[in-house]
Amino acid sequence: MRLATISAHVPEGRLEAEEIVRSAGGSRSQALVFSRLFGISQVSTSADCMSLNDTFEAVLESLLRKHDGLAPDAAIYVHALPLQYPEGRSPLGELCDHPLLTEVRARYEVDQYNCGGMFWALEMARSLLRSGLSRCVVLLAGDGHKGLPLSERYVPGCTLMGEAFYGLIVDNEPGGWRFMPIALHARPEFHSGRAGTQSEMSAFFAAHNGMVKAALDETRFDWSGSSRILPHNVNQLVWKQMSHSHGLAFDRVDLSLLPDIGHCYTADPFVLLSNLLAEAPDPQGPFTLVSVGMGAFIGAFQLHRSMNGVWQ
Image 1: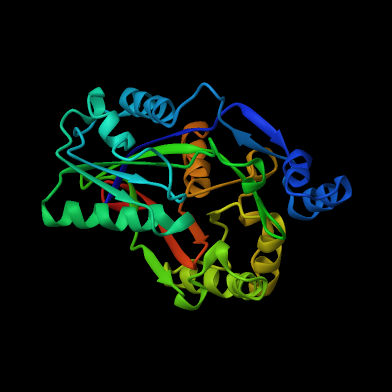
Image 2: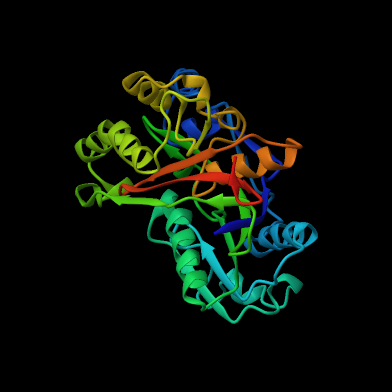
């Protein structure tokens, strides 16, 4: 499966870490310790005047400008939070007249895998393409926090939630950046996710390193090489611990967006990827993307570039 086009949108608004932590009853000193330990200074937030549809329209406009391949005939909307729109008002339905979506005949939604959702959606897209049910698939992803208390952005002992949105177009055309087999894991014992008790959450966090390693091993990740990991941003401490536990050079984990935008549901690895492909004239792969969603839905894959049938 080929990555034909990718585009990301990170809102310009920012909320300071201290403001969010204090909204949940924390003190200024707790906020400072949290920021220093976990590496999050602020998080991204959409302007009040921007609706979810407005945001995705901006993503679609960017994809339309960049894309010069087949027109998508299937669309998948991915989000982690369950209540992203009023009943009957899905963005895919509301935006169906957009020029990029005019040939879309089948629409799907993925919302049960938390921050791992895009990995499951990409496997769905691969199945649609392999079966001949689709020739080209557009995937849109991201979560807003409009209408939720500010304190909902704070997961004590874990992370602060920002907002980012993005879109991918995939097909089976030759060449380009190719998705290698996608590792999809689930750990049912952690099904309670963010609603779990303190002991359940502690057990989930304690298992994080092992879950990441198992997924990366399945992608045949080269632990001693130099290729970059594009991770879910959860926090810098957990990635330092993972790197130390498994002998991985910490600078191979790309946390460049973490201090500025925090951890964005479903989005982090793909926003990093979009930025890398946009900023570097000839980026060197492979790239390994990995995410562990609450509820222990884990996804990972490698993205390789193929030039005339030769893997780079």
